[in-house]
Image (cartoon, rainbow, N blue to C red; front, side, top):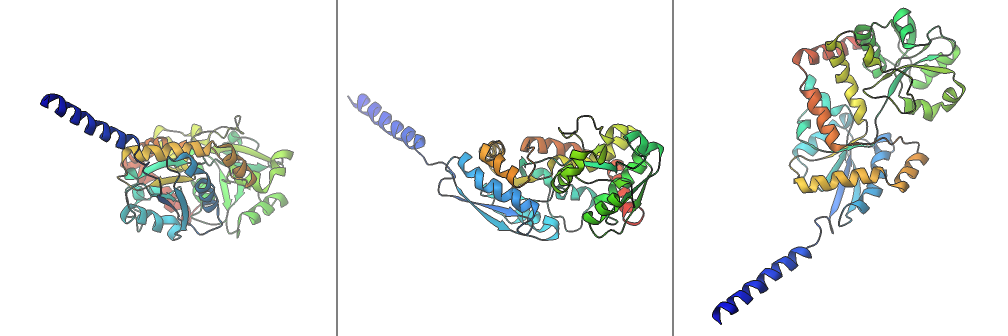
Length: 343
């Protein structure tokens, strides 16, 4: 009898443990997630983040409330440093930061206090594809023409993408781009192109062209010459990738360094050391949100491009770039510095 009693008692306690485990509340129930945005309210990063914050809770077990916190400063460097060094590492913080910040440690960026390989990357809501475009009256009609003839393009100033990319194309692809700088903004460059003062633009994003000048696309008044990215935009299947014109394997590696950030143009991440199962849950919810019909409808209404990549894909992309030989990084940094004084 004593043995039977002990067996029944053990069975009772075991069943209680199993029952408690089965009915334990999800981790995120009654939790608040902070969505930290590295920019002020109203800009592109802010719009993407607020849209995600509205959609994502329904795909997280426990349906936590997500609140927005803007933390502008130094092109989102302030928010990135805070995320790495101060934020709680429990999966209750999600951040939206500049696409290029993750690459700053490679070139010794001033004020960098983080290792991007240790973050929990959730994914990116979009890939950015930049293009070199010629006005339809220009003598330049193809990527090969960029290599054969001089192309007079306009930009806003040294140090910007519109200066860095022409330096890359001239040095590594054999292009002959003469850059006219000093325009106050993109609209001024566009007006100069329409007036025939310049022949085109070296590196506007395809999404910004469509948003501001869909008539150019519709009426074929611009000619996309090549795409400045690692992968083609689905709307430009016949426009070649500039990287495929690289003259050597080393040149291609340098271009990969610059173009990698295009594939994660709207990145979201959480702190290091978040538990694996919690990170997996957030990553899954992120990708589900990016495919949500209401989310996609709202993005379309806001003219936001959605072309998501996963957190694991960002992990692999960063590992690949950070494994680049030292001489590749040094060449990239040299070209970047050169573009500041000599586009």
